[in-house]
Length: 166
Image (cartoon, rainbow, N blue to C red; front, side):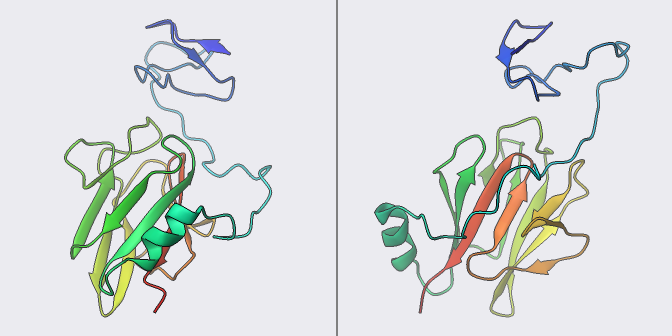
């Protein structure tokens, strides 16, 4: 564990920033360096079958989705198990409390990404975030249409995307 020099919070050894206060945990770096960018996806984590381990509650929530809405289910990271309903034309995601999907972690930019409903699809767009937005472990650089079962990664949050099964 790494103890935060600013607040004393214990953080995992792999952390770059304190999960409690956001202070840099870099060792041997001058006090002016407050930003480090590292890979967001942990290649050591084996691929898991998408959606095969959903709980009965998750399956029920997916089956009850209206035809014009979608659901993101957090599978890994802070708030694992949380669900976010996408039921408006534009849904914002980020660390800013005013975002529709509030992802409270230092690896998430304040205004990280947005999900846009158009042409019968939900599209995810990165909003010039520091760590990028990933779909199925690939960094996106343009609006990307999501399909049922796609994995969306924003910072440490890995979420599965679902629409109504019909």
